[in-house]
Length: 239
Image: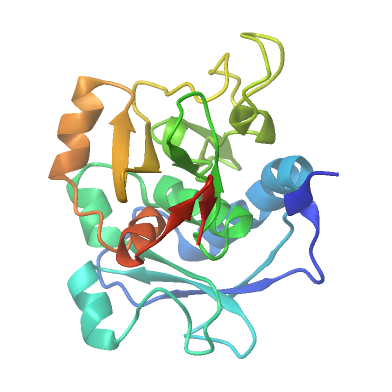
């Protein structure tokens, strides 16, 4: 059993929409598709079940996914990186996503997958290059790839084998859509952040992705949480 597959209980995730911008997808259908995404695709690989619940706001004892117009709205409403109880939370900024001609469902499933696998956004892995600790983010390396669940696009994601450098090229499956053929490989539309030299840094799958990435407003994305906390690195351990 993979070490991340152990859970004392299945987390309940409150999904609520405060965004006024039309999302381009029915909210009830989106939640149903994300539940199926977890049940049929993510959880069988990573051992991370969850129960998504539509709500009007935070629920006691529940994690959360909040659909907001923009980071500015999140700041005004007091939404930070966690729920009022200090539980894991993801934010999806509808206006920002649509402005970039991306899909809300892909962004939402991206955040959901990464929250379930690394709830506190504090896991790292060693990798192919020395003196680097790679962010344990499962959708970033294949960020622009997606498949459909009940007709609604959901993000691709990497498998545990992706973070295991002993695998040879083509020896196993490294992502759900089977597009990568070796550990730590990046799709041309993906990226990988890593901790090195006392800073969070980023590698991109292509120059096009780098340009696009730098044009995006990444505030509120779960990978941005890591940049808010100072860390001390000693003998490959992040503290």
